[in-house]
Image (cartoon, rainbow, N blue to C red; front, side, top):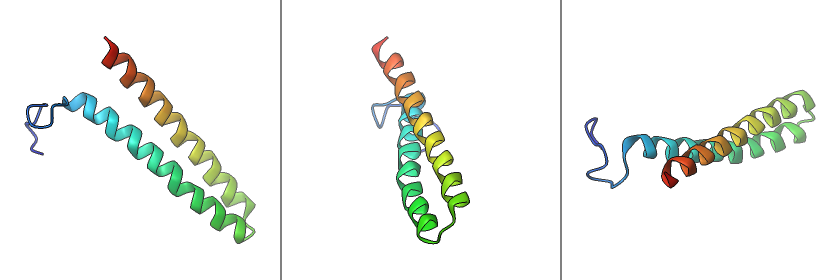
Length: 76
């Protein structure tokens, strides 16, 4: 995709695509963090596990906010 693509090729405008990408990235991060949490727990590092849990929560929160924003924009 070029810097000038604005939906003519993909059928999705850049701003909507950017929200979709953001949501996917947040959800992917939440999944990845689950394995990091498990690794930390296996190593007995509860401080690190809790750190990753907080980060995972923020990723989930970002995904939910992005989904709400996208839904609102697509319905108008």
